[in-house]
Length: 163
Image (cartoon, rainbow, N blue to C red; front, side):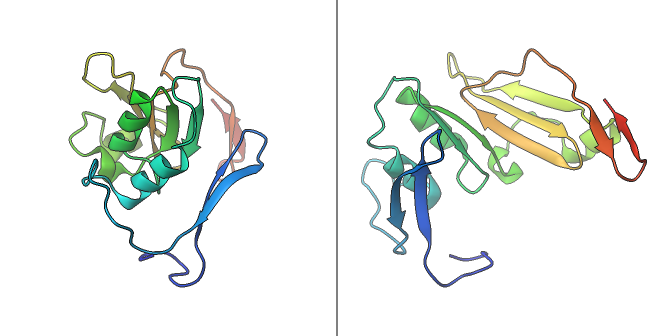
């Protein structure tokens, strides 16, 4: 896998339950044949869809993942099956969104955020960008932005807590 710290060796994909127990895994074997139904999907999107293929539809299941896997097409595909998804997303996968830029958020105070709902009728997908130590992007079909709340954080440089 390109651009990874360890390009060679065994790569394992896994799906765990809420208890943390591994329910399913597969060994990464390199390129696989494209499925005819979705040739435009990325390899990581296909991996998540394959790993969730035996999860029952419309049963309130939730998937959480990091930015390696998260993309809008993945969230849409799972949403169509009634499976909720929440994950951090790489900013280049949100091209064309109306979220505030990273520079604009950095000019505001720490903890500021901006969000947008996907502009499709009943899509139920939200994208959020907020600034903490750096900007963080989140894509979800499960959670909503409101109600907003504040948490107390400690700043090592200033040696004090703030909201």
